[in-house]
Length: 184
Image (cartoon, rainbow, N blue to C red; front, side, top):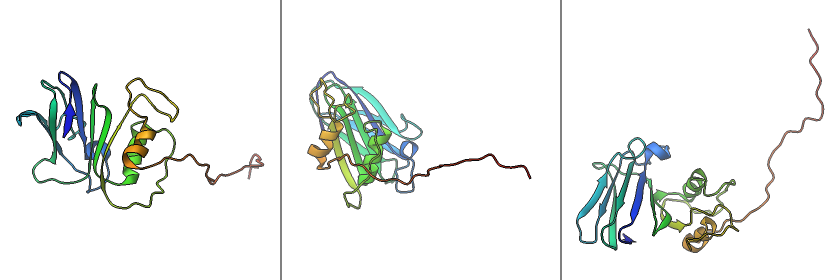
């Protein structure tokens, strides 16, 4: 459920196999429904996004609590990622049935985090996430005008995950001499 402002346009995306790729655990055909504060269906979408992914844009009439129903077509089940964007809610990413490593990969693919990330949480299994952050901040020191936290602050305050910058050793090859091959 999302508390939404009146007369505001929102973009909702439910990403499955077409956008996320992956294996049989990813939802093949997402279905997205929005139910208004009065309990009536406001909007629905099956294949409005990339491939079979669901995507819809709608403008609220009245302010209030809107229910977002996220399912698969028919009896399909699987992991997915839900994104909501609008003036009043900033950049919010919802993920259902996703691993911690999957969440971090999604943030990198979206361009929210530009550096490599390694998962050292030790947490296994699938989780559901809600993460709200400013889409204007790409580094830990940036400021924004929408009063939303950076993705780094949101990860720590909303999910309890802290990103720490470290230096790691990586294998490298050093060529210290080269000669032209001799003809046979």
